Length: 252
Image 1 (tube, one colour):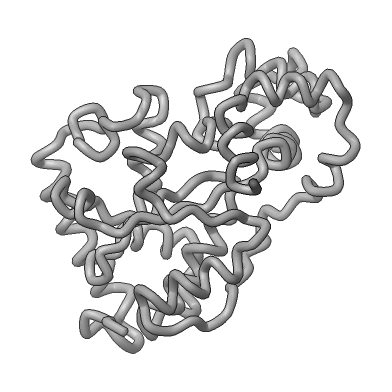
Image 2 (cartoon, rainbow, N blue to C red; image 1 turned 180 degrees about the vertical axis):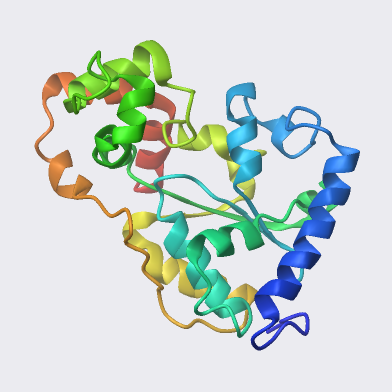
C-alpha cells in the first residue's frame, strides 16, 4: 500500500494541498473542459460535469470515471479508506474534492481505468426520488409547471426530455461521462459493488476495509422501479437507450 507519506491527523490537509497544486498546473495548461484532453473526449454537454467529478489516484495510477447516482459516494469512501490512514473521519464532500485530481493526458492514457454503472431505469427513478423531490431543484426546473409542486415520475421525465435533460450531471447518460472507449475500463455494477471494489482495492491499494456505505441520499428506487407505468418506462428507454443497451450487455 502506498500512502505517499500522508498519515495521521495532517493527512487530509497535506493531501489536499498537493492535489490543489497539481490541479492549478493542469488548469493553467488547459483553460477549460473543452481544451482539457481528458474531458474533450466526451460530448460537449458532459464535459463540465465530468471534469468536476474526475477521480484519479496518482500513486496507484488509477482513474475512476465517477458517475452521479451510481453509488459514487460509497465508492470514494471505500477507496479512500483503502488508500491511506487518516481519512476515515473526513466528510464525503471533502474526500470527493481530495480525489478530484486532474491527470495529465499522458497519465490518463497510461492509467488503469474503472467505472461503476447502475441499472439505467433504477437510476432515472432514483434521480426523480432525489432531485425531483428537492425544493431547490423544483424551484429551478419547474418539473410540474410551477415552483412548488412535486412532480410525478412521468412529469419529471417529460421535463427532462423537453427542457432539462443535459442541464445537470445527475441526469446525463452514464456513458456520456466516461472519457475514452468503454472497452478500456474495468466496469463494475452497483448490483455487485462489494466484490468489484474488493478486487479493485486489493489490486491497487493492497487492502480492503469493507464496503463503506454512504446513504445520505438513499432512495427506494429499486422498489419504485417495479411500480412504473408502461409510459414511464418508454420515456426512460428513449432518454437512456444507449445506457440500457450497454447495461444489458454486461448482464449477458
